[in-house]
Image 1 (tube, one colour):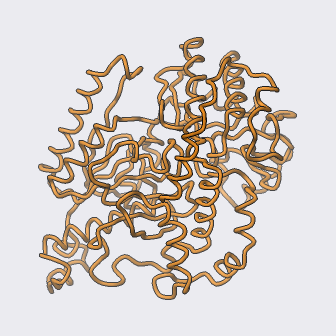
Image 2 (tube, helix red, strand yellow; image 1 turned 30 degrees about the vertical axis):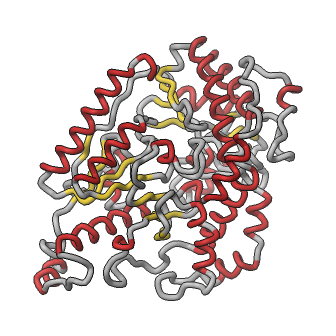
Image 3 (cartoon, helix red, strand yellow; image 1 turned 90 degrees about the vertical axis):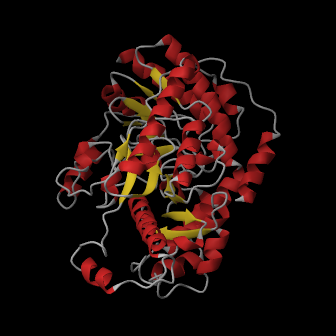
Length: 498
């Protein structure tokens, strides 16, 4: 991780480029910035209605064998490049949704193509190992030069997984086993006969009634256990049995932040008091608190560093683990490699879960006691995927080489400034603009959110929403100021026709 930070530090010494001078920018100004992808389009191109005839026909064919009711756009990935996503009808859109915040360094990134073509990758794909039993002799090297190279401060171990939901669920398991291990008196204490027998009937004490505390409007995945901590949309949870686990209120901040300092501070203190009360009083003991740095699926809800430091203080004094879900915020999107680095915590989180832009998944931890006391307790056939771990390593290398975390910070400040000016001009369409000093992790509310998102494709922009009324920006780390200029122009054009 130190090398990632060094790359960012080098860029900090470079003179700051001027802020956006207007909401439209000339071609000569755009050309002044050297693009990371010289072969990407200079602007979006839309030749007709979206979806076009080829996309519509392909969707009908796909529907015969695969549920397409959530379909956004069938994509021609061979024609997609850099920040631009292509469909089957030749349309090329500026992509600021990026596979739900999951493409870090651009479509068809040349460095990742070299990683994909390497003998190391071929071996990992053809001979996929059951990692818990038969890891490659290269597995330690892959982790040390990849995932652990970017580990959050204070966390030097990793458990690899398959997806964000899986990362969170395995972190929950680690928290529960740690909690019970403390109750027993340490890792060397053997299980009782009663525990061994009762767990086979899903009964206590072998299967204890413990809980994970999450927050209202949170999203931590759609698997069986993680769903009990997801609180963003009912459709995610309907018909699925759920654990009896507590939820606390996440701060509902008022904007602009500088105009509501005292109110927002009081709101955060109220929420912290609720967290502490639930930990102390909830009928199923709380083993861990999990929180997103920015509630992403729930509407891009923010809180201050003081709130998160308060959470850390509470978990410390109540002996509850603190899990930070960086599945969507991690790997550079907020202008720091990990969003929780903005908080300057007095001690690191106990676990940090990750996926999406990492192109793999898992959780980082530092306390060796979070390893279960016996084998096969935290185990499955795959336990991650070496091929995806190699891609993550390539992503880290590209982030370091190009200084992409610092690029995202600078570009995010530039983009936010342009959006702030649009908000002044069109206040009815830009409410609660948020994400200042958070890289390109920016959002705002609008009463015509669904119309805006639907209309955007016809203007050459692929964009997404979150929560009830938010438009969220999730561009790649290779998104630059000239892309921001295009996006600002397109956003203004869209709101003018709504």
